[in-house]
Image 1 (cartoon, rainbow over the protein chains, first blue to last red):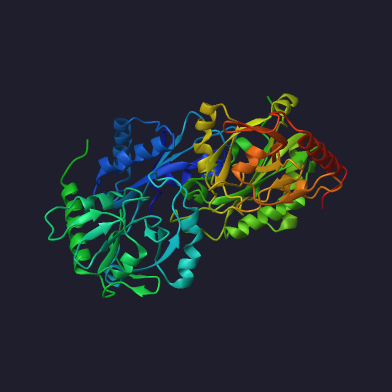
Image 2: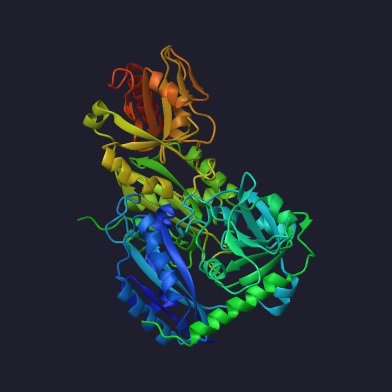
Length: 284
Length: 284
């Protein structure tokens, strides 16, 4: 068994299995904190700037101060990546409310914890099978911020299991938003690719898909209803670890052919190429 | 300086300043957990049965298993109270999602942490002054469960400070519900005392007020709108630590005379008597 990878905890590098927080932390007391999650391949943190932009933005939205300026944070990430030397991993940047003597009022100092752990990408079998999803009416409290509040998503895990479904898609009065940990796209019958614009977290993979050029179809943000999903030719989710994953069923309705579609697979291919380009670039 | 009181952490008694959780805990990773908070006076945990009822109910609603059966939990509380020997304190029962290897899926074992710390009751000056409150549209995600998600309440602290207000009262489209950490009552012009019934946590002090008998006015649950509050003769909040606290202003509107009212102070007196009765009773 390999030793635990190193983590960064409130200013120090410690083995992950020794990374502890005092129970007075506002994450423990009040679920208060934000985070981000990025992928590292062969020593390269992919799309690092985008993830750091979002991390600092989430902190600001929740009135938390990241204790490291951006160049310092990048230096810490570089050290951590060098020490752990993992071939394919995820790095989690976690900023909690900090140690609060009252257990409610945020202290001046937030707690920054950075962990790195191996991850696995979807297998060809998972890709070929696609995902079956269910819908649930819910909007996150602060959609623009990546807060640590996943109470609803976790509370729905047993329902997913009972129904044999893979993921839950949130909507508000039929207007589709996002998954707990991923964004959502449909491919309309005219091949236009659309992802919901309102009440969603700005996913980095979502952003990369929206930024693709040179495809023989349009890719855009816009309203998507549950009805639109049922009428769609294809559907897929995007996330840092799941990349582009076909969605083949919503509740009792089979989407399109019930198989991963041509446009979905084309976008997965394009995203993979974009990631490969990152591997040839260095980070500051 | 006194040494840190003892806490109960995952099966052991440890000094509070040594009570740490691994960062893989689902409270840290995903804000997932429930808690309860009760008052201990001169060795007596007041209304213990009610608090334990609610604690186990919150756990069940969030699909967490309390690792101790109720008689064992009471024995642990008795030990903790005996060891710490504090004259007036609050005990927090915290049940977090537990150490999750995936950082998302709940493990079989939740983490139980019990802390005890001195508390202060409201001063006569605070009571005489009363509270100024503001309204904010928000409903907690799981109103019946005492989850640790206080993201909204904490996020609103700076607004309270900027406006010179003490507390924020949640409402949904004008239907008043509760404070982040307290229940709300109004006294109508006919002296009827009313507390909102829907989308609120079942507060123990609220329950005790509703259970009072022999008053020359009715005390009941029912819908309360922001308009009702502005028309009320008196208003107050109830909580374990704040007991019955007069509310004298809502947003820009002075409630009643702007002073703590007769019915409010009568109920505070009755609650204090009820608490004193508890001190003469033992707990199993």
